[in-house]
Length: 127
Image 1 (tube, rainbow, N blue to C red):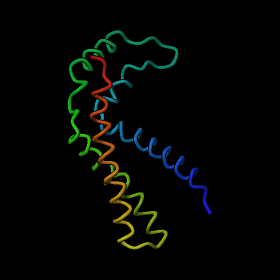
Image 2 (cartoon, rainbow, N blue to C red; image 1 turned 180 degrees about the horizontal axis):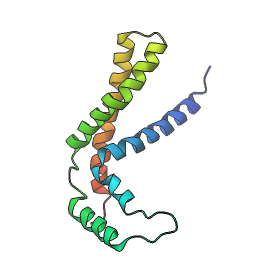
Image 3 (cartoon, rainbow, N blue to C red; image 1 turned 120 degrees about the vertical axis):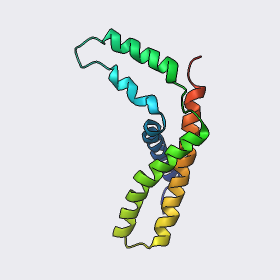
Image 4 (cartoon, rainbow, N blue to C red; image 1 turned 30 degrees about the vertical axis):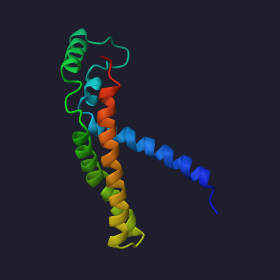
């Protein structure tokens, strides 16, 4: 009795949210941008801005391989998704098989997403 179109739309949106969370885990250089972000009502520090530019020029494509993204996707799946799924399943009084199937599915999804995100970041960088 559910509206399947709505189910697929919400599923797609949740997948996008998951990929945003996963991208900060997969892309090591993502946190560098916060270092160059000035406090409100202040000017950017030119030394930090130059350092950020030089660092990204030198290291922006470091560790940009499918395998590296897949590894971080697996780590994210095991340490972020597995605990959430397990706790929910335990409160729903589900068994180990239920946890293994659902957690396994989401760990595989995060591995695939991590691999794609990691390599996609290289393809979208300006040359």
